[in-house]
Length: 270
Image 1 (spheres, rainbow, N blue to C red):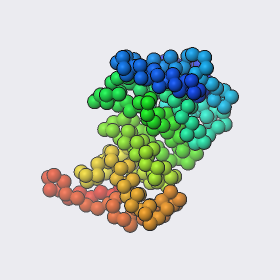
Image 2: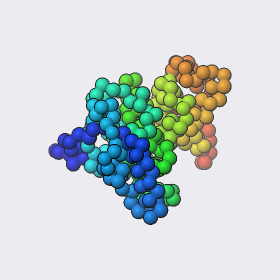
Image 3: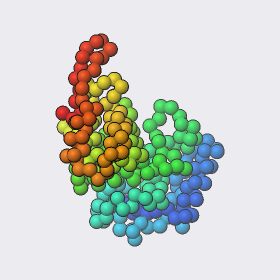
Image 4: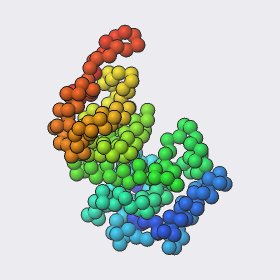
């Protein structure tokens, strides 16, 4: 069966020029002021607003609307780099590159079409991208980066679970904003605590205490890492040592009494 979300045409990856970055900011300001739609065409179309990235050697299948899952979207963006024999990580700080991805794909995925609704923080929406800030780094760039980690090291899977009960947003936000979670050992242990390999989804029932809800594992884990880093170099630590210290801490296992007075056991590292 053919798919309407996988056209055969390729999009050559570009970056915004200084002129393009200004056009993006101007269009965002206009859309917010007029309570109008953000028109990415005014950023991407005019000559001089974009230039080829790495000589135009990177490209990926075009995307017509937001019908891909986060996992599929990460694979699509990552393919632009891997298909050209290029790695994602060296380009994570290239904001002109990820702003291009945001303007090209964002309106279908992370950018609410009505700019003013995002700017006002309208409740009930999943969108977190605001083009006047750094939100694009937490989505387009990191989706590609996590897919690279999965392909090269088989870690980071929990970052690509879907947005249910805020699990995806919490995992991704805590990892990308909390740099202490970005080491391979930390991501591997986070996968072990929170990712169900068979279901390709975050673990739903671990009998975790009510104040340590499963969708908050990334926050809970990160808080412990910051304390651990005062006496250890967490970022350089091996997975084996990190897990041993996590078990010895007693923070990730134990018992608790629920609202009905029933004693429950939990062990996030079982």
